[in-house]
Length: 232
Image (tube, rainbow, N blue to C red; front, side, top):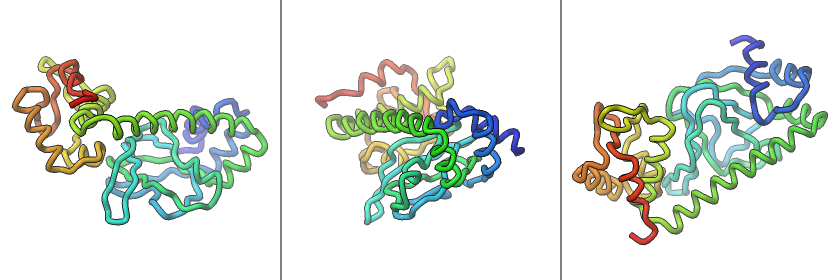
């Protein structure tokens, strides 16, 4: 991709909204396009980062892992999302992983270049503050689900999110246009694979969620939403 393309991408980033053209060009000239294969890490827990990342295509999962290897997925990101803002604060090791779920194209900009522009144009810090608050709000919603809702409710909530973002309306219901395994749902909902499998078996028996060509089909979103219950 050309530098003109990089400039167009940087100019649409919410991080850099309000910057003059010369600042956008400076960021674009320092940017680099990279391709990441599925299951590769953009950054990993315990390792500092010195770059920021704009997702152009694909899907990236942000997660946290325990010392014994248990993983909990926080959120999936797609095109238009920028990652790496904590690395702008200092050289501390990351506390989360960013792993590529589907092959992804990423625009990478060195941290020092972003900080250089931000010092000259403090509006960048205001933009980052707003982005951080949106992220924090999302984590609060996620934590309330973990603390107060059953596993069945958490899986239903995650599945409804995928249906809204990746669902295709068919005559038989909403079909996900991405493949999401039950193992992935276990990581997304903080449950064991066996318990998540039991939830999906029950839904299949009740025709709430079915499988078509290795993808999930939801005949009625409203019925699935009824599975979200505080007091199961």
